[in-house]
Length: 203
Figure 1 (spheres, helix red, strand yellow):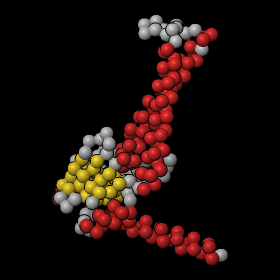
Figure 2 (cartoon, rainbow, N blue to C red):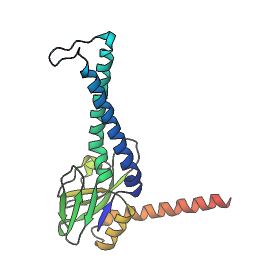
Figure 3 (cartoon, one colour):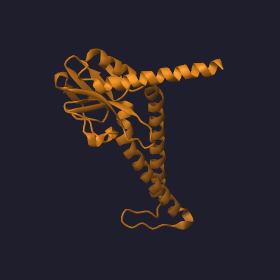
Figure 4 (cartoon, rainbow, N blue to C red):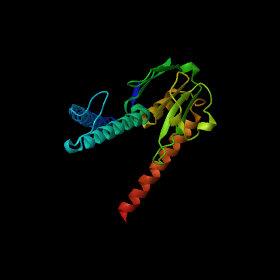
């Protein structure tokens, strides 16, 4: 069975990110084109004519390029896997795929630990990941799972209720201890919130 990222991510974040990235790329390319089209710019000898606005155009081109490079570096490292990764659970293998990323496969019989760990997010929010590992999760990366890369020995995927419930149903309890605890705590938390909201509505 194949699992994707959350629906709100796929249907809203993906298109928004693609439109933003394409717009930034077009603006950057156009700015660079306008800057180097002027006759005062040459490959070996760059002379800036302030009257023609060459300096302003050159600065704009450099700033646009730097911003685009920064954006792509952040997008490449932090967002690509969250937005485009998918995981396939088969009877014999766990397969992780993502665009512009190497596919990783782990045999089910080699997967000893299925748990949940949080990332060290920039906005101080706790985003959970479900991980599949051949060895115990390293303590030095507690609450820092985003710093670990996917390999054939360790696979991580953004937590979803659908994936968690499927794993708890199809994998033995001795492998899914921390996943069971986290999933149960989330369900209890959701029930408390629902009960609290119902009380407020009655008042």
